[in-house]
Length: 462
View 1 (spheres, helix red, strand yellow):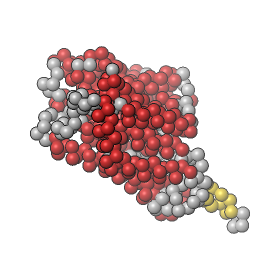
View 2: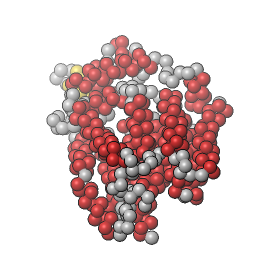
View 3: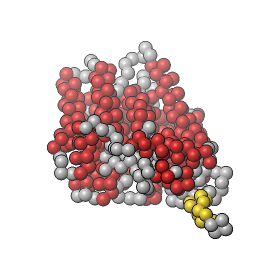
View 4: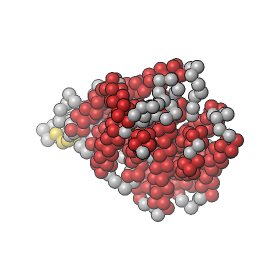
């Protein structure tokens, strides 16, 4: 029993942590979600430290000692600690706001309490701090506490839980709950779309399906199929047309590559079950869009798809104006940025009359995730994210090189690069990759892709 819990209970707790924001985003504010993330991070960290997956003939106490040694020696551990400290300092350094200067009789931007440290608009720092703590636990757990079979279990749990949240969101949408209706409209005034999270978990669901069939987990296959279909529906309902197109192409690419990699690894009946699951995942949201015309957001998506019009009118002009405004704001504080949540405040000072004629009232971020990252977090914040990705990429490519000649590749090896491709492409038109419900499962997918290679130094079959 202890070995079973070590292999799969840890994966289940990490999956719950990774998808927790998806359950809470329509119903709770950021402060409540952040508190839940911190408590779940503590629970998941306990499981990671106490019940790592056993490799080969390891006893649980040997696995714990080996894992602790790996975590301490992992450079990513100490880098992530720096990120958590940075996010904590930023969360405490609030005060960015618009203030009236009575002496000069003008409005001006008020800096954070300590100008030489990264800052935030009051109330905007707690949630990113909780996300950084959750990422710390998730990445170390994925890199050191999960075997290959545990990684498949993680993808299965995450896909099923994400699909369950999509079903709950669809039910709430049918009752026209205001937060869900707003999210389904996919407004580019706030270009941050929860449907991208469902797209990421959809790609993970494909890995889970093929892994379950390969391992002979027949009882888990229906849950994998339900997760695929539910995530596909959630992606279509809560994503703009551009994101739907990107994930549809990558979904089909992952299916084709997975079938090629797994040829001969399972029977004809397994291939047939995969084909049926893929068909259901594609057909269900297509039928939903084609035959449901009574609900506004779906009707708008259908019209945009039929007209091959991925972006609304005036999108390019607004994006160019916002990019110019972001550049002006960033130049005022290039290293630390203007502060989380401060772009709308800066826009009031850097926008020209021409800019106001093309951008929407209340625009929250630039229509570009890269400018959003740079203008609000500065070069320092952008480097922290880039270095974190570089650590994961280095592990991926070193394990890729070591895997040559040691056996076959698996679908899990592909999901990380495909997630990076999707988020990189979409970051040119939105900032969804900065959402916690997108960032956390994406980071784990990248980490587990590296661990899925057979290098001979890790037990991939336990």
